[in-house]
Amino acid sequence: MPTLRQFEYLVALDDHGHFGRAAAALHVSQPTLSQQLKQLEERLAAVLVDRGPNGVALTPIGRDVVGKVRAILAEVQDVKRIAARSAERMAGTFRFGVSPTLGPYLLPEVIARLHRDFPDMKLHIRDGIPDEQVQHLRNGMLDLLLSPLPVAGDDLEIEPLFREPLSVVAPPDHPLAAREAVKQADLAGQAFLSLDLRHHYHRQVREICDGLGAIVLKDYEGTSLDSIRQMVASGIALALLPELYLRSEAGGERSIVRLDVIDWSAYRSVGLIWRRSSPAAEMFRVVAAAIGKAAREAMTRPAG
Image (cartoon, rainbow, N blue to C red; front, side, top):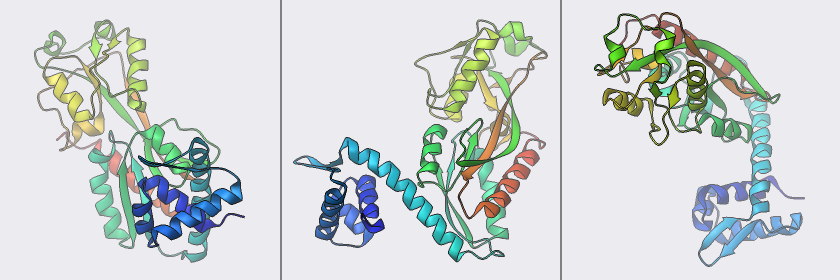
C-alpha cells in the first residue's frame, strides 16, 4: 500500500514543479524523493510523473491522484489536531482564504482583535478567487474561507455572517450624478464595470444588470475593486461597489459619486466556511463571530 509520506512527496512535487525544490521543502535528498515516487507509481500501477527533458510535471492521472491525495492528507491533519488540541486553548496556525473583494477592507481590524485575544492562534491569509478557494478548502490547501455566498456542499460547514449593501457609483460628470435621486428605470441601458468572470462578484453584477436592463462591459474587467473605482472615476462606466469598500480607508469614494436609487436595492451575503470534518470548528465559530461583529460595526460608521 502507498504510504502517507509518499503522498506528501507527490503533493510537494506538484506544489514546486521541481524534484530539487520539492526535496528541499521536505528536508530529504532528491534521490530519496525520486525513489519514493517511483515506488508509489509501482504500487499504484500508474505513471504519475512525466519526467521529460524540459522539466517535470504530473501526468493527467497524476493530477487526478494528487487531488485525492490532498484531501486524504487534510483528513489526516484534522485527526492530528483532534489528538493534540486543548478544549480551552485557541491555538494553531490556519490557512485562511479570503476574497480580494473582502479581505483588504474588513480583515485588518479583525486580525488585530483576534491576535490580541488569542495570541496563540495564527492566521495565514491567502487571497484568491472564491470558486478556486472552495476547492482548495476541500483538498486541504486551506483550513477556512471567507467568501461571498452561496457556496454549496454537504462536506462544508457554512456560517452566514452578514448581508452587505451594494451601491451604484458613477463618475462626477455623469448625467445621473447631478440628480438628487435616481430611479431604477434610469439605469436601463447604462454600462457597468465588473471583475473578471471567475469572480462571484462578476456573476452577481451580471444578474443585477440583467434585472435592470443594463449592460456589463466586456474587455474592461477590473483586477480589484480599486481598479473598478478608478475606471469609474475616469468616465468609462458605472459600477456596483460593496458598502465595506466604500466605507473603508483602503477603498472609499474618492473621485466617484454614490447614486441614490430610490426604488431599488441590492445586497451580497458573506459567510465563513470550513470542512465539516475539521476539529477546529469551535475555534472557527469564534473567528466567524469576530468577523460578523466587525462588519456590522464598519457598516454603521461614517465612510472613510
